[in-house]
Image (cartoon, rainbow, N blue to C red; front, top):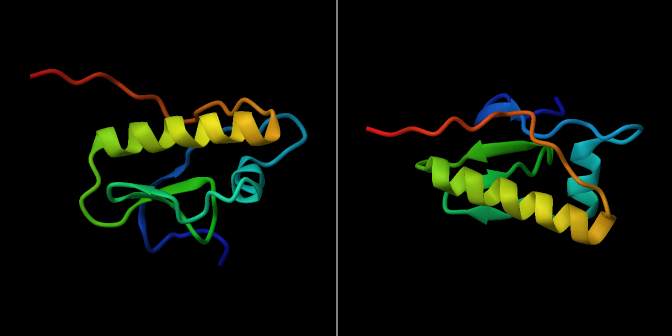
Amino acid sequence: KSQPYGDQSAGCIFRNPEGMFAGRLIDECGLKGIAVGDAEVSTMHANFLINKETASSEDFKKLIAFVKKTVKEKAGVELESEVRIIPYEL
């Protein structure tokens, strides 16, 4: 009930810092619902980034960077990505 299983996502994006919850930190920084293109911080659980419709990998990379930067600035905590971004070239 607390996680957006009905939305397209890759699950939790950030590791929980020692003694804290990444989703709570992101929420406390006011980032629920923030979007880059169609990539959005879930309004249900802030540690899930969801694809509202046609988000690109660039949208997600930019959103991850924005969330990390904002949490560092507002809460003084460095979030570590749980997902790994693999370069893709044709």
